[in-house]
Image (cartoon, rainbow, N blue to C red; front, side, top):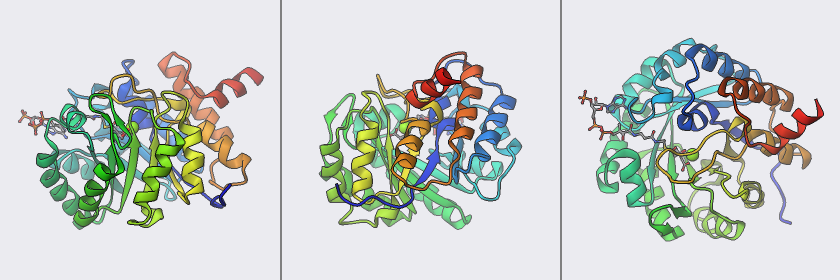
Length: 301
Ligand code: HMG
Ligand code: MG
């Protein structure tokens, strides 16, 4: 086994990627209480909501109010998903520390997700990235479907690289590589990271695994072996992409912490607090979340 990093920084995306796919409405007050619990867990970044069109993602239509009402822990970076200038305006009004823009490698998924071709998406993102940077905000970009698209099939590293090149040229601080539908296996992760990490510094690359087939933990281990130190995950494994047929939630923060802490890798996050936040949102949604660590600890309680 290659050497593993000593620490990993996790971005908690449950309040955005997790809730965006839920039919069950979670009240603004409950969202705020939940994010406040997460803010006390030791996690250093929380994606608290999404400033997309409320018709497209109704479960996050209260993003502005959530952003204004959450308690700000000075040790936490609060970011939100932004598709365009309108989203940026609202995100700035909500007082974000940073934003994440997003696009897909696959033309079909991009069109379904943001109603534009890839060519028409670039100038929109370029302006948003540059305006957000001028406003002093950190800017990340999710690049979705980096391994496979539910409509176009397999995606190669050669398709991913030119998109990342352009985004870095526009000034994004870092890029999150999205296994949007959770199909990747470790050899695909290896193939992509071998191309990506000769071009960009590893501390600018984040891995974003959905856990549709239970491969996310194996893929994370491979990523760690390549020196990746930044991961996205969601409390309890909540989530999915509304415009990617069959996509399950993100890898569960609970399970990632079990893996990392079990291998002596520091995160600064208190697993008990993540358990508490998982139970809280589970109760509000009225359903069990998929995390195995969550289920185990619940059974033992
Ligand atoms: P559109 O209909 O093409 O937008 O949607 P438009 O620019 O033509 O504007 C139409 C109307 O929408 C206008 O209002 C705009 O003001 C309004 P009107 O003049 O008709 O009254 N509008 C907005 N309102 C509120 N907030 C906004 C906004 N923008 C325009 N931001 C749009 C384009 C991008 C807005 C739409 O397609 C959209 O909201 N898409 C979001 C889809 C989404 O959230 N998908 C899930 C997130 S991505 C994901 O989960 C993957 C990820 O996790 C990584 C991975 O897993 O790989 C990130
Ligand atoms: Mg996602």
